[in-house]
Image (cartoon, rainbow, N blue to C red; front, side, top):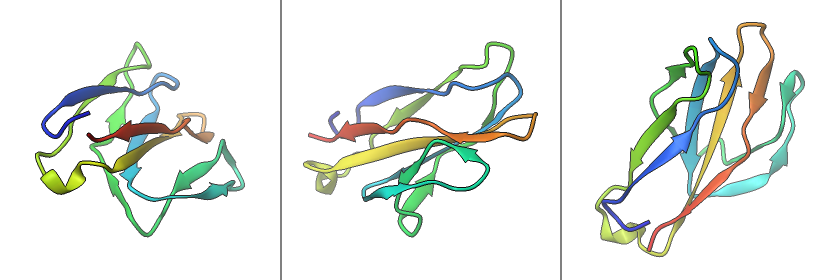
Length: 102
């Protein structure tokens, strides 16, 4: 992706789930948390949140993300990861998505 480019992140979980999406430029070793499915891979001290979504009837809306127009981002990679909190109270981390900025 180039600065200014736009891409879609697919959010996939159960209908009615609260879906939180985070990104960071630093990955850490995989961490598992009791009560959560999957593994967290983002540095918790250096992450940022995208707008949360409650998933509707399809259960899988996309979130459009635009890479900021900042020349200093060229040559970096961002890691995006979601956290789904379902109405049944189970929670899970999504698979990570890497976005290279060139």
